[in-house]
Length: 332
Ligand code: UT7
Image (cartoon, rainbow, N blue to C red):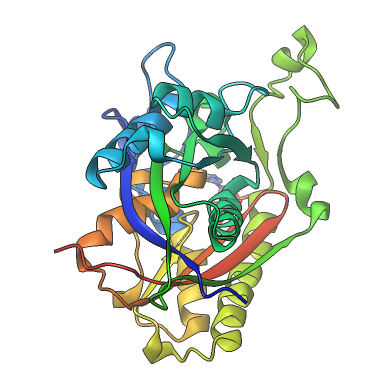
């Protein structure tokens, strides 16, 4: 078996300037700052307001910054995977558009749709391309313009989501670091609890679907919450067990940022102190595929080569999973 692993060798992000605060939401729907903070942990989110700007624009901004920061020429990229639940179009893939906007001409590119678990699904897929030895520079970008599918008259969903993007570069290494293992799962019975009712082949867009507000996120929050708490924690516990990791061995948990209470439950199950958990949900809300790279970027300067990191996510589908990464570089 090959000793090649996929190392994350850089991370960059893009978030829009425009903020949507809890105070703003108080003026839009019947809610209040205290409820939102205590039930979700969110204080504000970023929203991509500029007309004509899409998920690919945020993704391309993150990828351009990533290529610059890692000294990578667009010509060197072999593969680009975009994890998104809000593609620019149903087709072509947003990954194709991001590649074009970044001048990436020698790569294949495709999207992975696994809702909020898309970033770890994509990292796993990308790592397998690297492990073949044929792919040397792979970009994984998680990007979502959730504001394009959120109903700002529905207080149960509009308080949660925000827009943002993050990208990582993966390169081969034989130094015993990189993506070590992942546990990924899905269960389509969960589809009825979190989905977008219309706009696909089951219910193409029509005047009626628009009038019935069926192009927005539909979520049965309590049910999703219940599955998220148990499955995200189970996946994180399983990845630790399979890799003989004790709580003390784990330097950081990088959880999908959907709800502070789900994050806390996962950290508790792993026996981790709160100081080892990356949390920025208060500033960005749930950016779907953006959450994990937004955390990695914010904590990049604190990460050290060899740190054991566990990534964990849960999302629509249902999809969920956890990943064990040995961090590959010191940033200072
Ligand atoms: O990212 C991928 C997957 N998504 C998730 O992981 C999200 C999982 N779900 C959640 O995070 C939570 O279920 C929510 C944050 C969406 C909702 O929190 P909750 O604690 O589950 O609230 P609830 O739906 O049980 O509602 C409790 C009460 C209800 O009132 P009654 O029936 O008790 O009188 C709601 O009508 O809170 C009310 N409520 C609100 N009140 C003020 C619901 N939304 C709001 C709101 N402001 N925005």
